[in-house]
Image (cartoon, rainbow, N blue to C red; front, side, top):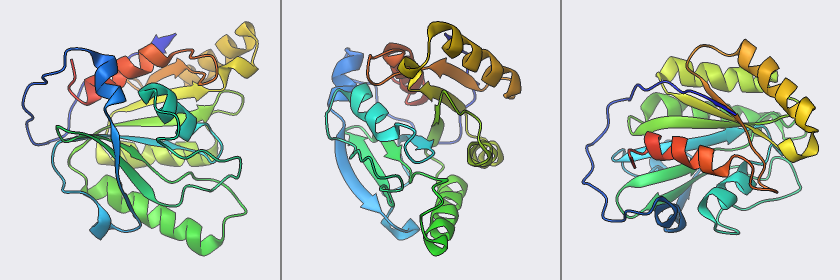
Length: 218
């Protein structure tokens, strides 16, 4: 169950054709590149990036791991707010996945929340290589205020968005379909949306297909 995403693209450096024909091989060859706590720590603004964002405990790290079939590539934790840096994962041809800090966890100190907000604002404003944003929302509690704020970040930056309604395995089929439809009705035209479960691999192939379009892997 997927709705279409916008087909626009931001300005970025053209990339050479891929040598690997198999999409799964490309995802499996993604490696950790670096972490950054400020703009100076970002990799060069070249190639293409797809960023992942979501509330703390939305299943963001688990999604990255299952999409790449690399257990432990993105560090998971039962403690909300664990991811406090922007983490970059790279394929050898300057295509990257970017794990943004989890947002919306009240127990994180206010100064840390402000830093995350400022850092993500600078990331969206400055990264011309950013070609798509994947927002992860718990399918039981989608479109919370911080999710709306992230959609505004992306809209202001002209960045296409695809939403994964995570933990769909925790809902009955009917409840999951209702969550999807209710969320779809609240989204702007062109924002992609699908149900997703890292536990039972629901929607993994659909998500990979969207990310591969963002990365120009088609």
